[in-house]
Image 1 (cartoon, rainbow, N blue to C red):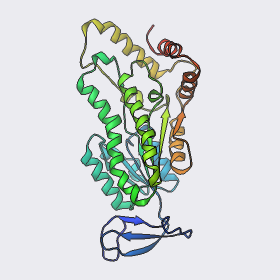
Image 2 (cartoon, one colour):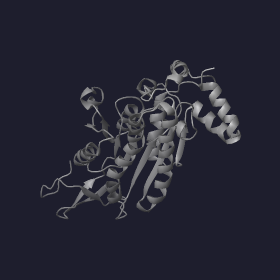
Image 3 (cartoon, helix red, strand yellow):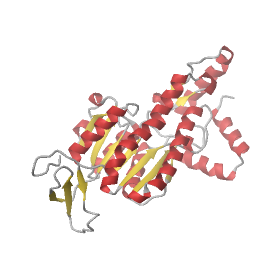
Image 4 (cartoon, rainbow, N blue to C red):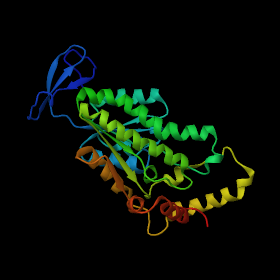
Length: 317
């Protein structure tokens, strides 16, 4: 926690870059009383959403092992035991569909570490099924989490990064956000939206030295299959047989992706997220054998040919 000589528990403006210093010292200016202090170079801090499992949890471990402070957020932090044991990891409640919880998590993170250098928007889930059978609640839940949750978190962190005059935002999307996938109309729509959001945002934040990146994974050995939902809140009787065939086929595909695809090592995604936060990279990074193949084929095949290939591989015969 950063405290000025007058014990103001206040955010500080990072002055190192502004003054062009190359020494291991940096200046911190108290926004309440304007007192100026000199500190040793501060550790960088990352805030990550959706860290209870999968890419998010592995990303916490990666950043922590590299010496970063980590604000690890999830809906039920009291259930997480492993991350609580890690040094410089602050475990906090954050529900991306609740603006107040986002505000509180950012405030607590700033109080603990004084800055946020990177934001990783990882929280999300997949809504499978027929669009016709999705209820309004199922539609709202998918977009509130995958899109509006990303927007709300970015809006809360941006003032911090603008004061620092630096930062990087990393949005975890999906190959389903670059190519529309069968039975994933809502999920793909939400991830396409995040891709468009990220590209537009990258332009408007250049002025503030804030970078935006997306990471688009394919199929990995995470709990994504177990965490998905199947939209059937608006069931249609004449679709019963087709729906059940789709559900059965879905479980099979998630457990054993069709050749030449396969389940990748999720640690590779965590490593790429870290590289996006620490190096100069392009806007979009696609990772995973299946994701790279599909992205390549989308460039060389006609829309009809790609659609036939994906339908043949992922839909029941």
